[in-house]
Image (tube, rainbow, N blue to C red; front, side, top):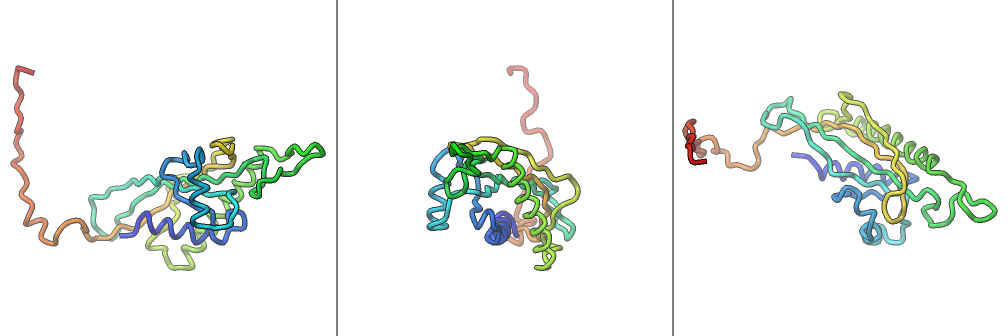
Length: 205
């Protein structure tokens, strides 16, 4: 059954070709708390030696919704994706002042950083859709059109005071028909209890 690892590998393959993100795509299991410590530095040092720190894409923990009890060809897992696309508003990825004025103070605004990262997010969605089509993944994964996508500006988060956007969009994954965690004879092996109240009402509560 495909799931989180496939999503990670697919997104990583796309961000590896992004001019702005340039492969700096990581999982954020702590809901972006990673930006408050040296975890991002360590991730980049280990995965991308010699690379700059920002801009970066963080995948928030994906939320699955669906009717998982069904095992047929029509079963889908609806997953809410949250991608945090951020960079310091006043410094470039090379840690130099962004668009400096004569006094070497940045003239690049937070609003412009929102705009920059929103473009990265929109381009990612367009490329993701094209890659899915070209790879023939239409029956495996798709960008769902059952709910709208969102681009939510974020400002000065983490110790590096990063700004950018949170890109939220739904995808659908096809579920396999197999029950993987049980032996093939599970329906014969499982002995359910009688459908009676094993703890009737008593007065000494």
